[in-house]
Length: 210
Image (cartoon, rainbow, N blue to C red; front, side):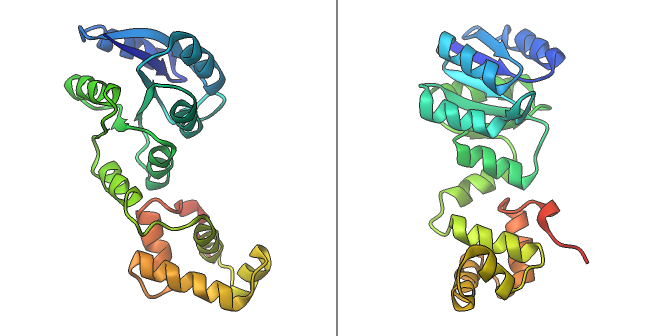
């Protein structure tokens, strides 16, 4: 029997999932929660196999809960959400989510995903999450410092401003851009920002608009 905890801040959604999963003979709901703090308590006490959670919860970010599940428990996290923005998908998968589904999936897909995630396998039901998963396992990932440089560039900062903000010289900033361009397969800042948004490295809201 697969033990499942449901984490969603909407009571109606939780009740709906309870009813749906009751149809699966090999699944047992051992707890539910509306937020990150409550979820940690429920997961700790119930020791589930799968934590099925949304990304936006009452008291925090679902990705932080996914990371906690990965680092502090024996369970695996399956994201079930309405959000398919690249930055959110990347954050969830980077945090350790084994599966990523949108809430409009068919029941059979949800059951299959839970079973696979319970076994430690992955299940990504959207083209975006599958692509980001491939990117995350690719050698050419941007480092944290490269992301900082790119975020500042997206906000409209010059090399001089970026250098001052990060405490590095302009030649070093140019070196970071060279690495970023190579990893993203582009040749200009604008192209780098566009590709970074498409791959989920940056959110569109981070881009400066004059």
